[in-house]
Length: 374
Image (cartoon, rainbow, N blue to C red; front, side, top):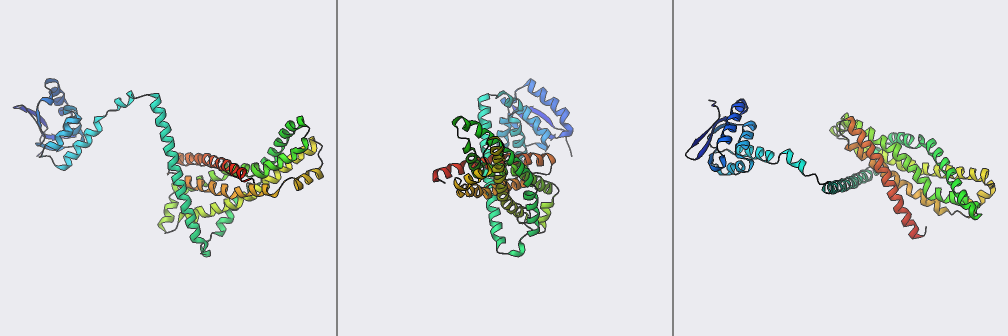
């Protein structure tokens, strides 16, 4: 039979009995306030074994009456309490032990700044671990399907090559053409002071063959294609299409990631070569129009003064950049949750990470090739 909860003082002992549940909360709260105002329960022994029913509402009142520390000790010292009630009292006591008001007092700017830096570093390390693990999964899947031609997704590969390569060709050619013209103007302005404007052709050729051609194409694909990969895979995950693939026993990495990665690895070297040619053409046009350097002179300089190794250095970096961009785009797509906001956040993250990694790898490659004398 249900009995209302109550508090009794007898012979220096506080006895808690009855039902300490939500229906009795209002009356029990008034009793707790009266008891706390008249006597301090810390001076009495407390008996909790006579409680008939208990829920979180009653447990919170006991915390208000006895305090979180004393109640936590009583749960271990009262033999009549069941393990379920002991665990309930411990959970409520721990939850109410540190109120929200105490956290607002600890507002040291230096501590908050260092904590924020630590969180950023930890997030960055966690992201790199995920990236390395996802890269290993892609390479393992790729190795397994290379020996089984019937698992090759040629149609999907061609479609993604068309999307990532052919559709990006005009913007890459136009951008590198304009940047080549700008580099030629800047080079001519500086070299004119030394009477060496003829070396503007060398400057444009070296910069686009080694750096600008591959870097501009990679940054364009990082903003254009990595974001598209993330949005596509994020939308598929939001619509539970990826879960459906796993339900049918199919590998999302094999079906969705491998064609995109291979398409990027194929497309970026082609776009890099087009960017190199367009940049050199843009710079050569400035040399012809503004510097009175003839086309035969430009061709002779490119043939005799510019070595093939510069072309190979630029093209050699393209597949690595393409692989990193595609992996980051696909990984961020898989990390997106079911909301549109999450898809947008991970799309932005994919672009930022891709551009950062491209510039970082390009810097490392530049130092390496310089030390090697290439």
